[in-house]
Image 1 (cartoon, rainbow, N blue to C red):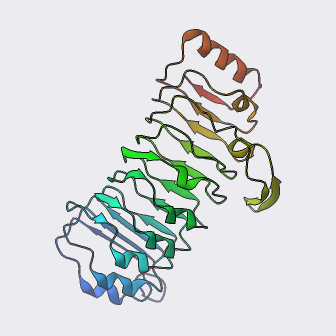
Image 2: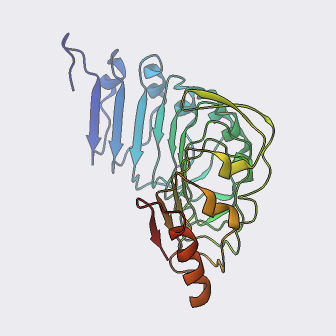
Image 3: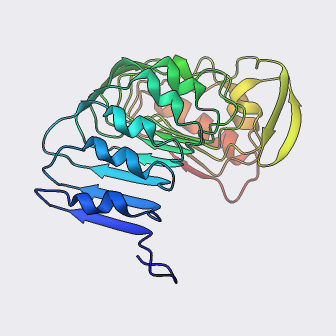
Length: 269
């Protein structure tokens, strides 16, 4: 894509064996995508740090294992998508990306827990780590006041993160949840800003957010849901399919949600 002055602002590279080094001289480049290509990410990419805001690197045939250090020097990035790149370790230097709003690490090989540095991404609103089957904990996200959308499907997590007051969408399908203990836990008292509005939050954590509209807990090991979920007046969709909820409990859950008289609520169970 070229702007009115003839400067290249958006570039997509698809299934290439080599990267043209001339792209690192594009002084107005804001969006770069590298998809299914066979070259290593060269250190020269750091030359784009002053302008590049969105970077997508997908489906690299050669696993990266760690994030290239040069990517962590792109301090103006607001969106970073590194799906299906074979990444095993995220360096603490990711905290340098202070403007990052969207981080997609879907389909990699991250294990155990997320690095603590992700908690330092104060602008982070959307995080997708789906398909990292060796991740067993999201505790590093506890207390995040910026996160609005968390997608962690098909991981190995057996308990929920806590204190996410601005969360609107939570996808925890395909994990190892046996209960939703923690979803109703008391929040950390303090002032929080969500969707431009500042308010005092003292009870209860994740369920207090008026922005909370969508849950996906399908394909877990749940037998019931906590009472507090029924009071979410802005909830639009909840997916509890393929759990261990018996017929009697299933009918009870459906009846409780229908009792809220919310015609827009979709219940999948």
